[in-house]
Length: 109
Image 1 (tube, helix red, strand yellow):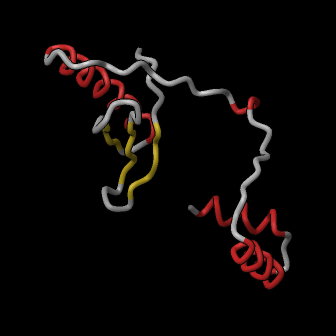
Image 2 (image 1 turned 30 degrees about the vertical axis):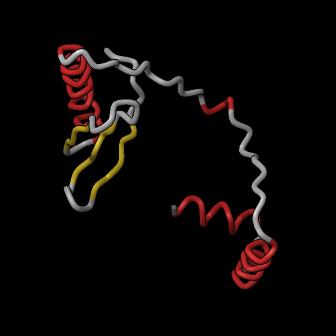
């Protein structure tokens, strides 16, 4: 099994799950379930690495993904005053704290 991290998400367009290996440009696979997409992606990663080596191209090392407990859940973001004011007003209008509002906005992407 390779050590390249995968990002797996649902695709409405494909009506299935897509698994991408972000360290390997263009390397992805799909499946009806997350497990199927992950298994197909493992095969795609192996094929990607083999093709790159055969072509004499460099193969990037897998990036390290830290476990969840290594993250505190806090980070500082500096924004323009006008954006801060707009976000604070929107949070107040929804009856939530600025932190809750911004977390929700970030979670929705």
